[in-house]
Image 1: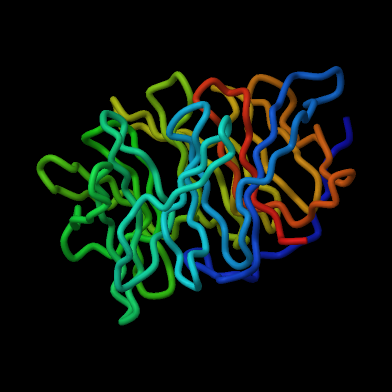
Image 2: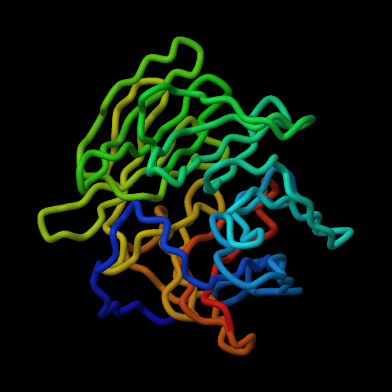
Length: 288
């Protein structure tokens, strides 16, 4: 496996929903002698424009923010039938970062309205109608811990703060300032992960124990990288160009190359998501 040298710099705004031409792919993953084996690559976005921010409500279904006639809506794609449907009724704005509620089929997503209002909404699985979840909180990104608690990054001028939200009581607690955009629940643990901008302007990755609320430093993300995904409780993936790199918390303290998408003609990997069983990886890349 090859060690990783990153020569990129952070030049993009963390919380900007940039409308680049991007596509969402799903690939099966399996351990290999020198990293990961990628099998059965499948493109799940079939329209031009911004298709991004995937999540897996189940092993056979994927949600993502998809371009729907120039507006970002919640797309739901079935990997078995290879069919897509729009989850939400059209609103005045665009929907981003769709994620299934842990204990229902409803979906939460960030809505950015045309007037700049940005809030977190719940979308009913039966009707597609939406209701605001948290009043007066300008949420940029979020991740569920359970049906009661979410971790979110909240806009604060040109930066973001890390905020713990109780959906039942509607109470909020600002934990840290100057956070990164990627938030994850670590599989099969009581922890969530987040990133903070360090003194050099790069991103440090941390774990937050959701029982004790103690936090632990994990590693620095490679320079220029904002997005990562835990494929299990100890291994983290990031993408750079058309390559995938892994950090193993039980191994050496370095990022190593484990797979390449070069043969598929894909490039500029950004966001990723892992299926509940850990066997499928969603990848966002620049459109061909």
